[in-house]
Structures are given as C-alpha cells and as structure tokens.
Image 1 (tube, rainbow, N blue to C red):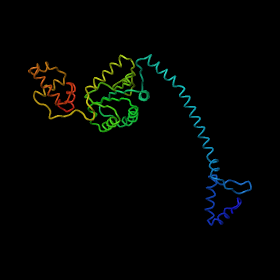
Image 2 (cartoon, rainbow, N blue to C red):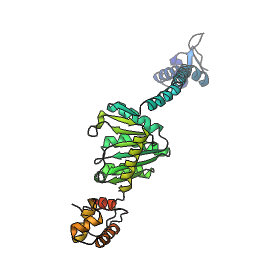
Image 3 (cartoon, helix red, strand yellow):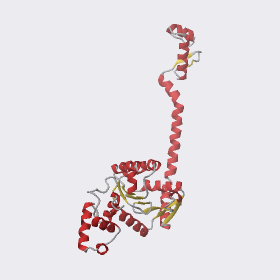
Image 4 (cartoon, helix red, strand yellow):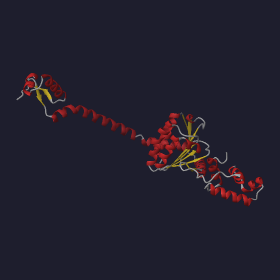
Length: 309
C-alpha cells in the first residue's frame, strides 16, 4: 500500500519501474490535478471527476462570461434595428437618387442590398470576362441569394464566352438556378434589386469611383424597360445561338447585312433593286436558318457566328 508521504524512490521500487519514470508520472498527474498536497505531508490521489471540476472550472467561468458579453452585445445591436430601418426608409423617401463614393462604401452598400433583396436581381455586366478575384468575391454571395429563392437574371456580352473562368462562374450560377444570357453590346453596368433600387456607376469607365442608388419610380421603370429590351434580344449564355449550315452568300448575305443594320424590307428592296416580296422571303429564310424570333435577334446571332465580318 502506498502512503501519501512515500518518496518517489519508494513508489518506484514498489511499482518496479525506474525512478525517472515514476517522477515523470507524478509530474503529469499533478499537472492534471489528480495528485494534490496532503495536509499531513506528501501527495494524495484525487478522483478524475473532482480533478476535472477543479481544472475546468476557470475555463467554464471564462466561457460563461464571454457568452454573457456576446448576448449583451447582440441585444444592444438588435435594439438599433428599428432605428436603422427608420433611417433607411427616411433616406429613400427624401432622396430618390443617392450618391455613394469610394469602392469600399460601394461594396458595403451592394452587400447590404444583396442581403436584403427578397424577389429579384437583374444585372448588366458589359465588357469581356470577369477577373478571377471578382469571381471569387462574388460567387458566395450570388449563391446565397439563389438559395433564398431570389430570381436572378444576368446579361453579359458575347466576348465573355471566350473567358474560361467566366464560363465556369456562369455555369455554377446556372446550375444554382440563375438565368444568364449574352448579347453583342451593353450600355453600362447596372443592378436592379426587387424592382425598387437600381445601382449605376458614377463613371462607367472608372467603376471604383462610386455608384448612384436610384429609387425614383419613373427612372426605375425606364431602367427596367431598358434591361428587358436587351434581355429579350439576348441568347442563352451557355448554349448560344444555333449555327445552321454555312454563312449566307450573294443576295442572302446582302439582305442579312442590311437587316442587321435595322433596315426595313422596303428600304432593303429599294437598295438592292428587289421586290419587297422577294426580300420578305429571304428574311424569313434567314430567320429560320438562324433560329431567331426577331430580326434583331437574327442580326445578333449572325454577328456571333461571324457572318457579318
């Protein structure tokens, strides 16, 4: 039997182990609180439950205090929600156009609009492919919006199809439920949230300058119509226009070029010395060949196929 006052050497001898091993074991047990000084001298063994209570009590107390502090901070912040919503409604009511300057402020505003939108997000993204950094930054937020059931429509230019990172990004969005189309040209970057707030760049050539938040119903109506105008004339980003046969030649190509330029059948007939009926037959044939629903769409698909160059 081991007595609390037994020396390490005595304990080692009784256990049949080296003294150094007994010293190391005693040190480990003391560190864990399983051995404590005895009032009568030496060390006495403590149950693991008692040792755990003594060892973890300070940590549990610290965790409890942190949780209390977190709850208090959360309560103070939530108490400001009413003031925030009131201020936001007043801001919208007093100013139909709000200017936000600087890239950091712009990102904060867009992040807030992403978080609070409930129905739809329509976006115009002119230019070629998006940078890898922009794609990495945008993807989590875009997917979170789609997971909430928000309807997301994005318009890009045909040139973005040749940028593989952008193609991968678009594919990810489409698989998550987004609609993405492309068109030959777009006028400017634009975001429309829930049909109630549009985000436009202050300087289209230097988008880091800042943005204008537009809430005026009349202007919003125009911007939404502008988006729909381009959306109806665009093609699916992934599938793209169907190529059927070879590029038209001769009279068919002449009619296609003039049709893509916006000429009416009568004007084309006059310019080419044809009858309007003959032009109409050529136009119908071209629409069928390009699988297009409108003359504008046919022109866009012909341009994408390289038939107008």
